[in-house]
Image 1 (tube, one colour):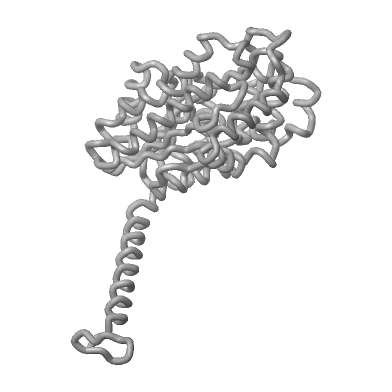
Image 2 (tube, one colour; image 1 turned 30 degrees about the vertical axis):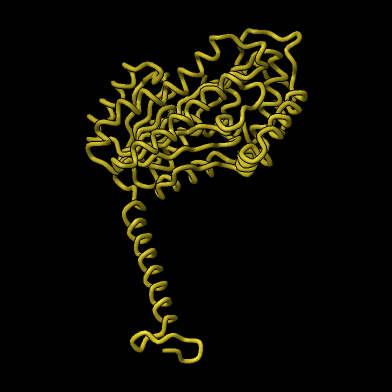
Length: 353
């Protein structure tokens, strides 16, 4: 029967029923979120394996995971780097194991997984971070530059992941964190081999997320923009070495364009705790990715304009030099002070090469 505009259903109004249903739904959702936070918020006691963990972002991540109470395994190609990194981590109270390893080789990746598992029992979180970068115009690059990028970045993520997956599937609730790049979403001029490998890594990471979730394995694709890791001094350059190093160093150390490696590491670990699927770091990277998503042609035209501002290949060299071999008055100036500080802090200075 009708009473005014309300409908009486067994003495209870329809509005009351709807309000109760909405309240119940809200409570159910809140309880699910609480359970999720309780289940995944605490990383203490978990084992984290970080490739390329001896310097830069990898070392910063090792420190941040260590602050969360994790046990850390780091690997890198050079023993002296690992010794310094391990000492730095242990001085902070982080339980650390280290192994020299080239993850672009499948046999090395298998040995690394075996080493980490034997040392700490199992691997809970795998962070695929190892990478190299060559900077310069495409016409200064050779096939070997593309091969090197694919080996260190793409295969350097695939091999450890495939080696670790069987044990991760067995115990479930594991995590894989893949450090890609905005260059894996938008191909930035003068870094094409690097971009190609990062694009491949993004595809691998997103497909891995889709297939592994049913096993309880969470996959996080991290898409950083520019970070002040100090890596500019270790990057390789072709073409006009000083000019290429100049724009790269200034961009990568400018606080308006880049974020600190400490902040990046903190956000990555937090996204790992929250079981996020993707994390894009830095406003410039987020803006560029969104623009490319809605207006790809505009983005490509913008990149072609950026390319006109960069050194061309005329008079350049196909010989590769590292950043620390290509210094100039500009790259030694206060303009790159933040980058030099990060290099000293995170094992990247020239005397450490």
